[in-house]
Length: 335
Image (cartoon, rainbow, N blue to C red; front, top):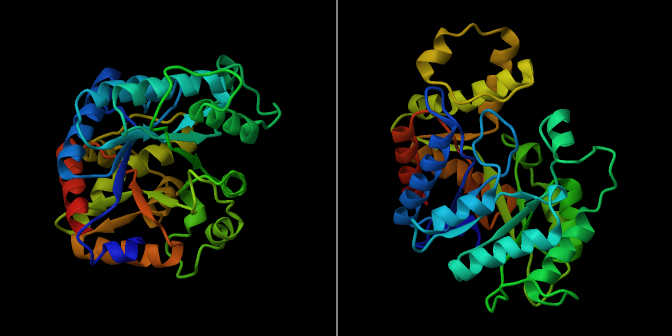
């Protein structure tokens, strides 16, 4: 079932990606507590998945270990699927990744997903600390296949604990990643410029992924998850304000080279802002969906028509946690 059908159907596949954003005035540890609390709220609202991220030595993000955070979230949720958006495979040995997620699957059977990405560290010192180099050979496709063999028990070494239900793999995909996912017959998660937010054209790269998809017993059909910022509020202006802290942080990171914690709207309004920062903020706004429930419903319908998405993974972050909780609730009610 496609998202365009969800708009008129009673059942919805709608998910959240929470990056454990730190907030000005709070210790880093609070970001993890906030993620756990948001996951419990999403579970109660009936969201399909709740995913967490991997970032290293970034001031604005508290989660460097998805598996550890998911273990805590699993203990505070009951039904929602839990996964990684994602584990950055170049930073890890495939066997270790498989073991971590098989352990999670053993603890929370039938609820664990493994999203795998290929991004390296945010800065050169972080890449050095991770023992990674931008010039290292690209082994993502072979490493990904190795992880899959450990998970399905077909590798020469048996990863423990063995799983009877398996752990679904998703590829966090750029255009190159889409080709790898199609060749291996795996679902994809796509976001960013590839979606062409604001355009009315089909996303050719996604259609090519579907044409090139090699079906397997585990994944007989291609599957596309679209990930982007989605903010919903009672008014259009209020929804726009929800996006400002994240937009401002991204603009600041482009200026300073360091991704900062989320700041309050009052703090942002008091801060000096260059024309360049203002343009970057507006560019971020243009790449997100936001508005009242009626407006966002139409925006999601239009996005589904262009992308053929099977699922939406909303990656919204903002400083005001009460406003974020309301946005999550309104978004769940939209579809």
